[in-house]
Amino acid sequence: MRNLLKMGLVSLLTLSLLTMCANANTPPDNQDKKSIKIALLLDTSNSMDGLIEQAKSQLWTIVNELAKASCDGAKPELQIALYEYGNNWLNPYEGYIRQVVFLTKDLDLVSQKLFELRTNGGDEFCGQVIKTSLDQLDWNNSTNDLKLIFIAGNEPFTQGSVDFRDACYRAKNSGIVVNTIFCGDYHEGINTSWKQGAEITGGEYMSINQDYKTVYITSPYDDRISQLNIKLNNTYITYGREGKQKKENQVAQDANASGISQVNSVKRAVSKASHVYKNESWDLVDAAAQEDFEVTQIKEEELPEEMKGMNEQDKIKYIDTKKTEREQIQKEIIELNKKREEYVAKQQSETSKENVLDDVMLKAIKNQATAKKFKFE
Image 1 (cartoon, rainbow, N blue to C red):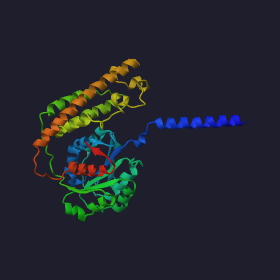
Image 2: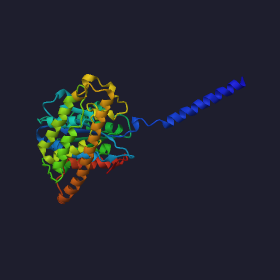
Image 3: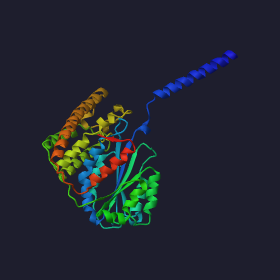
Image 4: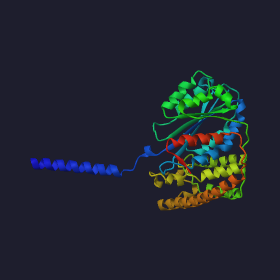
């Protein structure tokens, strides 16, 4: 009996040790992966055309700086959400507020929706749009993520039935920082409570000239980067029901960027060469990088024409070929962009310029990222 008891205890101890070892060798789950989550709340009333133009023209500048972020040696995932408020075309029963884009990694979708925004007179309820973004977005409970709201507008922060203080304190309790951007005179923004809204959450109050026109400095490297962008697009392998549509949108957003300026188009190409531009939902190269990906799970009818009829080995080889091609193109774009940035820095005037959207946002993001141990190259 004693021998049986000893054997049982030994077996139990052995099982416990094996379990401990297995747990020690188990990689950390996705909860340890950090993300940068940004909700952009834009006033789209009549006087805000300049703000929308800055958002469209400076999106890729902001993305490129965020792509330089790291934490504990790892690159964080970037998610962006977009809301519009203060527009008479919107539902008055919802406070003239609309979720344009949920928190997403799909940067083409963010760009598309920015370019679709149109202004129209209305009532701007800052407290309510902040509350709505807190209610609707998947912020999650992770304390590792950098979670930021940027709200921009030019009417008093106190308007509407939702007290902005209640909304901001709720954001603070959820680990979300609210940054306020007043479009107009700095002191007027203070007098209309924009600064108070930011201070509640430890955010930053800023003012910008929304009518400032973005200045672009061309470089000798722009043409080559533009050529590489075309080649980069050819490495995408569409699949699934949305594949073709998403690929068309990729090209459409290239056109939107180039419609503003070649420099803006170049900055978008640089974003597409970075780790934050991922399209695993419709591109087989990005999808194949996922741990649970199996090419055999993709139905034949969901494959592009050039892959239909291929056996499993040929499919894998085709995807790997496109992956290698993409990595080479992205590497060259990144190397050229370093030279481009050095050139532009030398050409830029040392005189101070107007406060603009990308400048104030990036300063705030970098300041607040420090508290989460993020670093920027």
